[in-house]
Length: 511
Image (cartoon, rainbow, N blue to C red; front, side, top):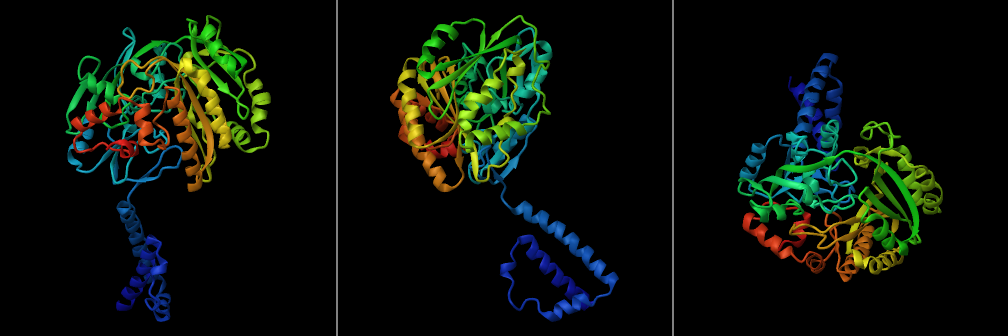
């Protein structure tokens, strides 16, 4: 019996080392040849019994080891792994309240994790993962409004309202994002005549740092309403949102190639006051940055040519991955896109439902791997009158730093109605840069350098930059681009005096 236990002990020691991946720590005389011979001399039944015990130990050890290991969260770029203290996935508001009241350390809030600089996490925080908090609380087709838990994705909202021939009024291009995440960054889209999403929000409910549940709108707790939307999770957890909806309609696509220096005049004369225009953007072609393709979707009574109400969920995006790889890596790839691929893509004038055009899946942008390189976004805003002043600075900086740009999309957004951290203090043009970068430290340092140059260029044109992306701007640039930052930070100190709600954005700028 002693021999069997001794052999079991030897086996268990080996397994502990396997579990901990720590063979280098084996003392040279811990297990000698005699121990191994004793183990190998056991009869078959005893061996099986010992193997069963060892297997059970292995399972329990691995479970225990996994439990003790701190979880790591990351964002879509895979550039910002952050070791957190723990994670919860609430399904009701009381679970959120309890977590906030009982947790003494920092708390961060995550949704789809499509922000790209750590805006949903910080080290050793309890992360509230909102993605299971996704119910529809109230819907009125007559009033054209919906109240949802904020972990719901836009796609689920679209599926719920499409049968009533209603559509989301303002959202970003891709439908994978959560409503709460979109509110927290105050998104905009390609919608003509609209600005940031706050314009379509009637009311929100929030849980504050003390666990209090409040309602906030333009009349009640208005400071929190205008602070939390576009507030990047710094004031509390937005748990519910009541949104204005609009009619679903059929839209017809048209496009036109222009010189970049002609675009502002074209937009002002053709698009800005077109009551039928629903979606519009213009794509600037790299590397020369002198041509744009202006694309508009306008209301129509024509029959649809696309049979789907929403984009199919089972679509495979292998072709998209191959195209982006060609554009970003192959010699002549950008020329090929401009002169061959896009002319084929934009052939004809399809007619589709508004909800179809608003239900893109971000999977079409996802590469096969983000290990050595990754796709990233940045965005800059300038007043409409400064369009011609900004784009030469933009393209010069990108060329000088040899940035691997795949596309720059121009959108138009109306003035923000009052959010404290407004990125549009007047009507603006937005420049959305989609580029590829390496994942090594030297690659990050290069991006930091030219990012600060672009931020400075936008500020020089009385503009701003978008905060959901990599956090490279200096504190001085942050306050210059967001002149009401002190108002926001003062409000945060008032309702979150212990700095409970944190993420990498506020770690960088909240003093």
